[in-house]
Amino acid sequence: MAFKFFDDVSVRNTPAVSTAGTSIIDLGSGGQAKAYHAIHLQFNSAGTARTQAQIESEVSEIRVLINNNVQWKVKPRHLFDIQGLYGKTAIAGSLPLYFAYPWNRDKDSEDIMSIGMANVRDFRIEIQWSGTQAAPQLTAVEEYEKTFKELKAMMMINYQSIPVAASGINSLLDLPIKGSYAGLHLFEDAGSSNFTINDVEISLDGLVVRDVTDQQNTAIISRYNYAPVATDVFHIPFAGDGRFVQSSLRMLRANKTRVGQFKVDANLTVSSADTLEAVYEMWGVPEL
Image 1 (cartoon, one colour):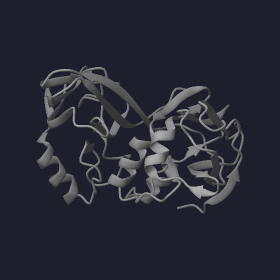
Image 2 (cartoon, rainbow, N blue to C red; image 1 turned 120 degrees about the vertical axis):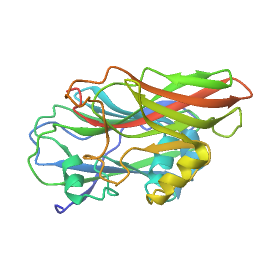
Image 3 (cartoon, rainbow, N blue to C red; image 1 turned 30 degrees about the vertical axis):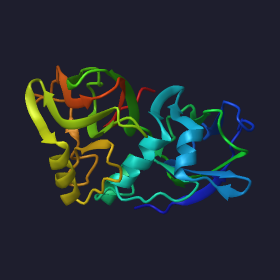
């Protein structure tokens, strides 16, 4: 692993109390001798660190854009739960954006996952405020290694919102068919009990690669040293051995052609219509 530097980076456009808006962190342009491992966000109000629940309420979405293309679109709730699954305990006020996974069990791959700036024209982070925040104070620290590196692949995180209205099988058919899936995380309705996920079946061109109940899944991933924090999330980490570059679920057939259908069937018990959020971690070539 390379030596990593930690520097404060400026944040602009943080809105006033109870005002919706977007804070922006500009990380520069190409030609820099930098490869980003993470950006560490710190949320305070009147000098006091915000709680996880307050951050989840006050920040509606976080986006990572490279060359003006959205590579990450995620909510704080998603990140807290996914990082908790991988063993990172939440700390008051802190929300890291890990581009190179520190929990990767292949440390060479951690450096591979860093975002090189040699061929990047523009790199920025947007923090969307919900308009409910109290005297927001947002600071950020960049974590990087000094090296000339081109961005050829990265871990992208995004989510889809799927309306659910009836019990039974709800099929997710619109997930992107590209790259390799490191993880799929199905979030039930936060703070209510309008529906529960009973079991999930995942198939590629009809070949079933995962078919487990919620109880079975929790037991299995726990034995691989993953630590599910919330009970309202159905976590599916495909890299069972913790090597997120090499062991993810590839969207390729044995003959190296692209998979035609990626299907996720979630069997739900629904008491009232709501929205399921499917968050996916995908290793692959970003749009530049």
